[in-house]
Image (cartoon, rainbow, N blue to C red; front, side, top):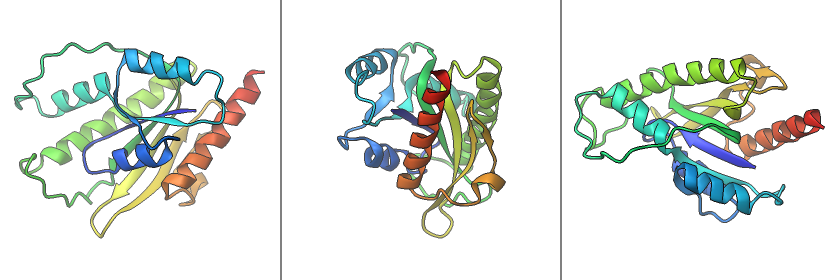
Length: 195
């Protein structure tokens, strides 16, 4: 099973990717080349999970649209591609709870990036449903609250099996392990439905 984590800084993407990758060595910045390579190496390994910490083209797009005046000093071209066998998980700061002090960000920059990610997450969910889940296998949103320590909760999952809302999920998926079990179950349901 392949999982890609996306979202703004300070949401625990790297931690989630490391904890859920079978080798504890996730791939940073999913590119078309490393995606193809890992996909091929795991094609007969149904019980192994590998994670990507960010999708190169997606991160590039969102940050530049959210902070158009920022100088990135990175002119490397990106290849946009679909990954229909990857579960995309957005880890986003819960609105109104960003309490991160970081030298990399000026005031409100992280909030702007977070807001842009919310817009794109909703759009990608709609678009993925429109094209019959050919962009990503599922798309989920985990809200992260750093206002009093660290708390996360799965609040939405768009799957070809079912639309899971925060009411249906009812706070049952707050750890990386519970997220992993949830995605494994969805993955098994999707595979079974295609047979």
